[in-house]
Amino acid sequence: MTVQMQPLGADAWTHVVRIIEMSFGSDWPADEQDVDRARFEPDRSIGAMDGDEVVGHTCAYSFTMTAPGGPLPVAGVSMVGVLPTHRRRGVLTALMRQQLTALHETGAEAVAALTASEPAIYGRFGYGLASEVASVEIPRAHRSLRAVPGSREVTLRYADKDKALDLCADLREQIVATRPGMFRHTEPWRRGEVADPASIRHGASPLRCVLAEREGRTTGYAYFRTKASWSQRGPDGTTVVERVHATDPASSAALWGFLLDQDLASTTTHRRLAVDDPLLSLLVDLRQAQLKIRDGLWARLVDVGRALASRTYATPVDVVVEVRDDFCPWNSGRWHLAGDATGASCGRVTREPDLVIDVVDLAAAFFGRPVLHSLGAAGLVDERTPGSLAALDRAFRHDPLPWLDTPF
Image (cartoon, rainbow, N blue to C red):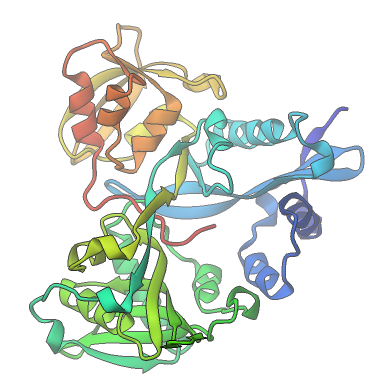
């Protein structure tokens, strides 16, 4: 079998729908397709061709994502799939290689990112776990929050989600500027936030919006649904929280106090919290929240030198890093990274390295996730110069932690 990679062009969407439905084993509801098609960039779509048949696919979104130091162009890899008839034949590997090679050869984005349906897949292509997300399931009986000064001064009101979209989107942009791993929403992504296709509700209400206001300004908002349920003991509903964004602690506390105390609901859930979200500090009894941590954003350094020079560093760093990268061999070799909070440079050198690291592990730290120390403790980083790993670990960290709030 010989499979060729080629751009799919204007007809890409028809092929994408078939590939996604067949490879994921389920129908893709038309109302969900409408949301995703509005975001789709057909000129960034690559098909794997077995003769005239499209048997695999990948594409990319043109994101502006926050990195330590500011906004960064990132290729958001998505809609990846291979027909079950062509699995275990190297098709996915060929698609990933074609996509990354094209980014490198054209000088496009120096960083790619994705969310993984199966986390074990993408490490072999050089993607490292760059952020995590938390899920909570909080019983109403254990909703107590610590007191936050000013939270009683916050006023909450329901708003029409469509009419309030610009207001909410602008408020989210203030958060994006401070949090690595988030990306700016273009118009199709903004509209997708409130599109609310019926197929994703799973018996819950339409999407609802509540605004937080303080001293005449909108300081936060929440998107949520309610799902009614009754047991022999009485009401047993669920408040399903989709988003909470706030620009100050008081507004965050007020919104969460409201969401945790809905009538007829015994539980409040959120599936995509930042792992340093204020809620986790506010809860009096965190144990009852059934906190779970899972993978969020996966990052890939397409061009190591350009990527490392594109961000800033929390503390001054001056090290030679030897990078191992079998999948994208142009990255392999020794790189001199010098930088601080004002900027950085990163170029090839021949002198002996201070440490040796796999590109997967370097990518895992790129957006500020504090993992380099633990990777070293696990024996996955070879430190040649004592103290160099600790220095690199301190420099790469970012506060707040990286977080992807919008899956893609």
